[in-house]
Image 1 (tube, rainbow, N blue to C red):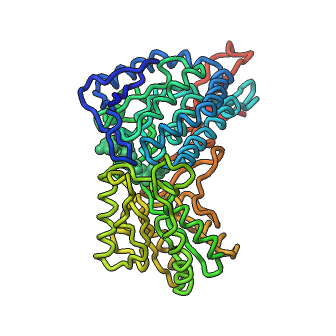
Image 2 (cartoon, rainbow, N blue to C red):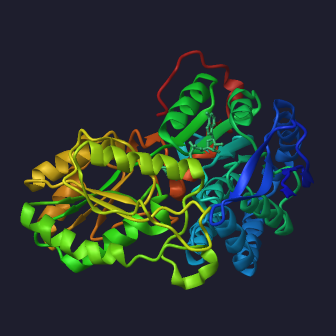
Image 3 (cartoon, helix red, strand yellow):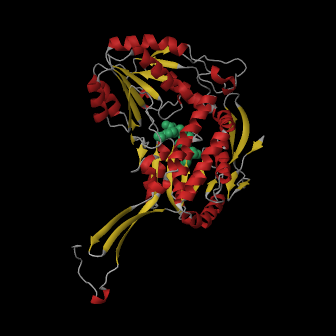
Length: 499
Ligand code: NAD
């Protein structure tokens, strides 16, 4: 049994709290490692190391910091297979999907190589006689991030790459379900030239999270995970005077108009609904065909595709479409919601409840499910299932479909499939959701745009990555400078316009 560590001040440090979480291999159901759960004292030690190291890192010029990012990109590519293997083993996602997880993080690191450009600030020459005004973007100091299990490489990189590029120290509290890749990333950053204490990994649960929220030295918190925890961290973090951005759960609708290419829509839905076992915050979990005839055609195309899905362990390579869910509890919760859907009157068109995989009977596999005739009052509609379960809600018109997406409490992503540019434009303009796809089922913006949901899917003012991240991880300081010939002329006592 492997005992994992923290990574504090450049060293692997054993947990001292005596508390551990089980890390499973979701494909076999076996406990493969123990993850230490930090105490407040362990968090304090990391913060102290970060506080001591950060000023020198902030004083390192941005181009040198960017070079560390450049080298980190090279090391990520060098170790891609090793990282992806560790990721799949703890998370359960397929090997190509694990590589995608790393790649989407790597792209944000690449974006952060542009830090010298992003941090240039503003300058007004001659704002008044002999007066210049300039704004600087300065790092916050010690920053922290709390990340979910479903993207153990990508989301930590979305946070720590801009934080470090801006000159901050960063403490990562990854998910206790799959902490190995975050530890490997911290090691690789140091191999790339990052000084010790600037990126640390403190493993843990609510104790470690509360220690972050209440720590006086920590200036900002980034969180990605479920909505109740997002709301909790946002509220308590803000009231402690920190800068906080929290991204929560999702229930992403895909609207299928009668004129859509139905094969394309069905292919998109199968990938977006069942890929990564539905454990993506941008997964499509609700299909909304407009009109009964569209719904019938869609279901007819979907069923054979879903029945053909190959569910299995990542070790089966390219032969697998999706893997197990993360824990036995997650599997239980998903199957419980499936039962509730049946009890509340939805039509289970594809039933994955009896799915078994020979040789992997103890793994956390869930067969694919498709529901039709779901209504907005059902639990399978209101709740985030986070599993391979797609709900179809039939809408009578475009306006009804739009209203469904808009009335749902979550607002992370959505998509419309249509050949009609006017409908697509109208949808993109009116829908109250942060990320919109037009004939694109999972519209995750690339690194140089920003990522963020609306409503109960996002709390805070700024999105992740892209230009927003450089704003989130810096403070603006504005200097009004005058080098007058005539300070000797005497003091000025009135607040005057600069004319
Ligand atoms: P989670 O909320 O259970 O855990 C996220 C983090 O919070 C983990 O690090 C965990 O240790 C910590 N945590 C858990 N319980 C806590 C508590 N009571 N107090 C303080 N901290 C606590 O989420 P998860 O199951 O790891 O991830 C899945 C969820 O994340 C889904 O809801 C998914 O939609 C969401 N998600 C959202 C986005 C987004 O960008 N909006 C991206 C990925 C995942």
